[in-house]
Length: 139
Image (cartoon, rainbow, N blue to C red):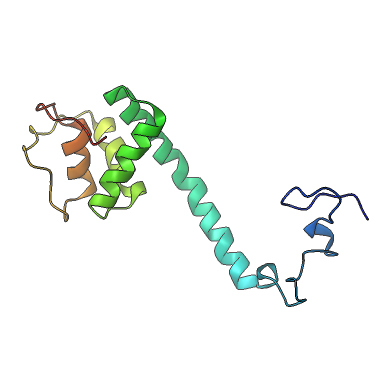
């Protein structure tokens, strides 16, 4: 035994990096790490996530400041609006930050929430950045 640690943290198992254990599937078949196309796709997904995460985190912080809620509630609010209106979370977060950056105050929001085809900007104005019209953000 090499005494290394398996990526799952099992003491005494061999690490993947040395190619000795875990490089193949349990039956000796090539694992996903042997497929260059799959590795490239995974790398691209990770790069995308790394560039989008800060935008979502900043939007969470903005929601926290505007609604005086905790981080979990802010993320839940953003996620709920994103899912209800079929808008990517990143697009919604970007629109919220753009609204705040511009410092413009859009017209008062309507009593009814925007329809499913609303743009991310319309959603952020309805739920967060428009002057309050007695409506609370989603909880």
